[in-house]
View (cartoon, rainbow, N blue to C red):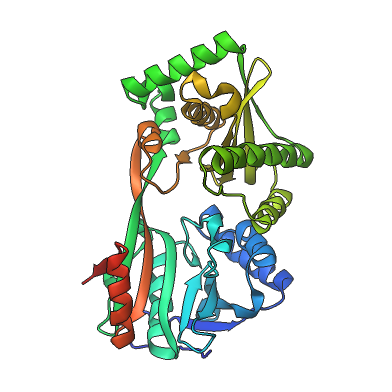
Length: 380
């Protein structure tokens, strides 16, 4: 792939490069240096990206996307190339995804090119402009799981490109504002019906099993134990009770999470909680914590023993939200999705976009037809 530094668009001073990956230890040093000067999410951190590169990403198809201004690195990302039709078709290029259903099931959200704080829009526009003007033989550039507030759509438009988008709500709880107003989460945010449900579930658990107690895994051994038990409960529910594959059905995904747990610290990365009732496990919650934000990632609930007590999942999440509020976190992200339980627990919501940037032409028109049939939005 080639370099560009001669664009006549507003991103003219940005030098964009798409190159072979350097050794991962060198890339880590470069990535962490920019990370410290960014406002990036956990899904843009080296802890997530480095684990993904080492466990799930096919390195032979991965390229380093970098953006420079006057010799200074202001943007970094990993794009993965995929060719269909026995590797003879045009390239599809994905940001922090590989184009494999199982490998991508780890679900990257709050994604984007890691950027120097204040340069996010310019970096993304420069990257798309580079692909439009200087890269050949690609059909689609996928930008999955990007916060809509971080998506400068008007600046991405071009007569030579077609933008296609799907979007989803991202419910969240603003813990900082609750703390500032000296407000309790449970009595302030959930509606009366949800509060009644939480009280009823807690009462049934206490009556049947005993007092409620919440604990957090502290050591690496504890985190591994909590995770393995979460996986067991999660898979038992989805595989046996729901009749569908759970989130941890593939050993590659288990390996990714074990590696992510090993890379985490007590302050950053994987955070695992357990709720018990009189010694009986209610369930486990898997969070990712980063810069004052707790991202709810996954759960394993002991439905077989306590499933008749009401809404143990709601109780687990409300307990976690209270815990994070009490430990000074600013925001609790329930992640993308329109599930009723997320809306019932949230204070507000943002929007997440999965954006496809396609070259205009007859191939793109075929893709348009496919997208429309699958409910994706074709942007004018």
